[in-house]
Length: 250
Length: 188
Image (cartoon, rainbow over all chains, first blue to last red; front, side, top):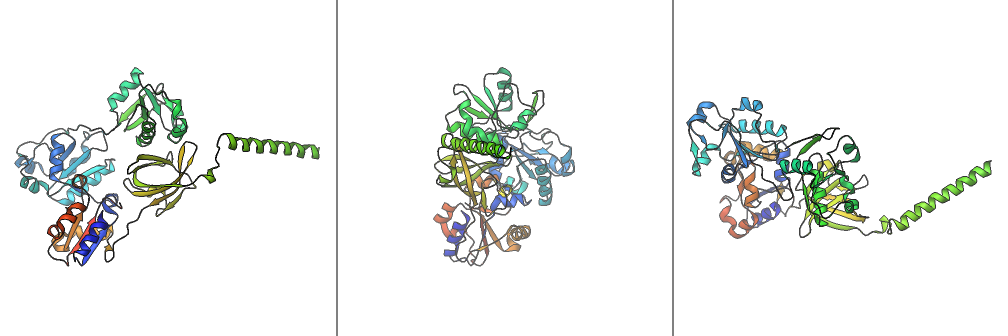
């Protein structure tokens, strides 16, 4: 996309045209932060699909903050234990200083969150857009509702499926990983064997795929879906004990 | 004894050879080397080093899953760990049994139009820290509006390619000597 736009600009007579070919993904992986538009934040805040954190001091928050934001001064960020379990949750910061936003983003990313941004233009642009400002206390607790993508199963659905035995639980971790502890009655077919061994699975039952993080499970899901299976997958971290007891987070 | 032993060895070798060639004949009717390479291009969806598999979104085909191994050649990358989600990649692969096995994975690198130069992360970060006025730049995010609004480089203005094609100079600065920087979600 960007080289094409740059070519157009060059033709229009711009003399100093550059392309940042690495783009947004490398900007982020190099430790810099990006900002979300007020429109995007407003829409997702209303639906509880984004968490907005006001990093300013308590008296500034009292005078006026984004309606729906949670106030967490930068110094207290590490003490919070109510951030969403899902590491793909959208988390948006605003502050007086952009450097505060940058360090908050860094902290939360270190905890494994992948979609952490600043609010473009901060409170000023938010007001300009005409979005709601509230005075007094901000929300005490972080509220977040995860939105699930195609084929993804909720943690609750996964637990229910394992307990009821109505679905086939497919473990696509390696043989060694499965030997160290597997979910009750699960079938182990390592992700790299699925394409060759999928016909071991029943076609008339719902198949629920898991691995340890959801990455391999999603790939197995893609293969099984293409083969016409009724399949869903767990996109979450799961730890399984040698007794089959498991804990899902994210 | 010596003769007997080597005779045994011959029989054993013959047996191995037969078993091996039979397995080739019956289990894998086509030798891997004879399979023609196929090529696809798309954006990386996921790459798991644990199971040595990767999946890419291929336009018109949906998601395709590939296996890779130590023999898989990488172009424009030293290790599979360098690949990022959404990276434009080309995969040359062959079908081995039920699997698509990647023979070459190429990270697609942008070709810049004539007269356009590249800017790297450090240079761009230095400009962004100064701001558009002091840095005398205009930063453009060329991605579609929906994707861009989720997160963009601070101070960037969103001008999707179709908008630039339609509106032209109207959406760009009047000063044609200003540093004009375009970026998107990596090479596409």
